[in-house]
Image (cartoon, rainbow, N blue to C red; front, top):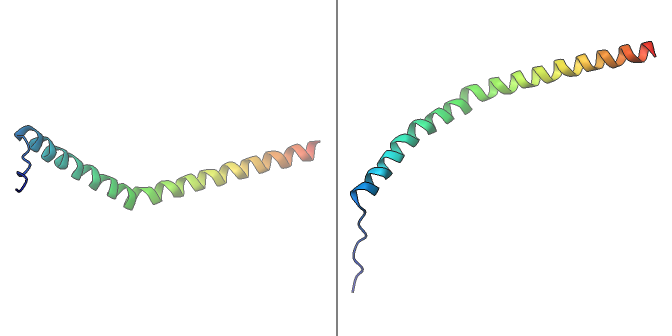
Length: 67
């Protein structure tokens, strides 16, 4: 005897389709962010860290000179 095919209710089928329709733009946005914005943001973070490091270095040098 074969098992009867599983059937989904209309509400669950519509919810699945709604979830797919909602996830496609979200996935496209995440892909765009990763492709375009992520490298730009990491470059900015690296530049900020380097400027902070140079400021700290200058302050340390000044404190050593005045000690």
